[in-house]
Length: 186
Image (cartoon, rainbow, N blue to C red; front, side):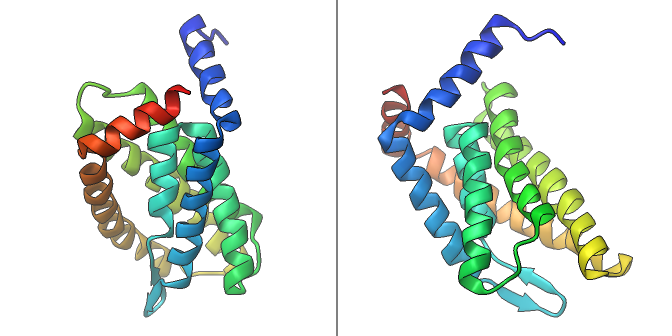
């Protein structure tokens, strides 16, 4: 498989962000907010609504795929421990994929159109991580019927639209964008 020199240097740059103390601090805040989002989620019938995925998406979009994946995995594991859920490795993989896919898509596609970039990043991450991987886990481990799994589609769509709006508004804040750029350059 051919990987261009530009892609390799971008991946190395993304990995170097792990050594940046500011980025690590922001990632830790994202994890903490995600854990709080898991605790503040609410259940409507068989579906659970919460914003624990919001900061995982933000980490991927703002800090890159590797940090997004790390935030997703850590937030899921810590959140499960704090809330009292059993840690399910497939669901943790789904959370990890949400951060990774949102970061990959955000850093490679539609860079000239911020709204489209964020929308496609969220949609791709939600489809793969939340709908496909987590639905497989719910079916295999918890024996959810197909009807219940299909109800996850509109709930993910509604949450995805809300997440898009929040992330888009944050990314359009010039002061925030300047601080993010400054933080990631060091």
